[in-house]
Image (cartoon, rainbow, N blue to C red; front, side, top):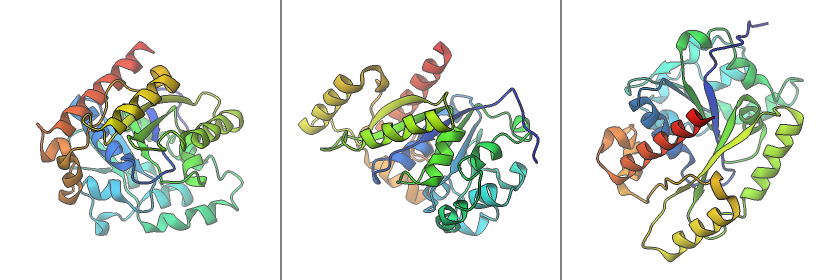
Length: 267
């Protein structure tokens, strides 16, 4: 049995939306980079079998010897799986397609929903000195996502500024409520962040109004604009803050990081 620590734990935030294409991985990468730029020490845990967060932070497929698969299923030491990136203060536990079989393999494990929580609470975590851990979840409410929710202090939900955007939230909120009741009673909503926002588009404005009317202070004041630089950056294996530091996307993610840090300071 691994040893666990009782203090100096980082803030663990799951980035979750069961719908694909909403800017979840983009937000994980760029929020992490913005927090790191602000002097926070950050770990991204890539829990999506597509491994896009790993690619977007410059970890080539051949360099992913140990991944979240081994972290979950082979009880591997954190020191073996945490890799540094080209971004100062930012590390990652990468993922590969091997993770796609994890759901099936987890079913037979009696601790199947708590494996990530235990892995991130190994005594070695203290030595890294992380301030934040961001978990990039797969686009589904499967056992991997449940592991992330049970391991986390809070949930950050990217919400695309499009028709039907709010409809999928009800199922996610139900899942969060179930996790609170069965495995993590202290789990809270970090916030909802509107992504791919276009202020010239009436639909974006309507989605924002609906979100703020229905969810109030849960919605971050910062919105992430639709920005070509944000879309281009992953193909160069870097966050938009490194790719084009003055772009609207980079400015927005810095503002989101500042708002998130301020919210946590108030807590």
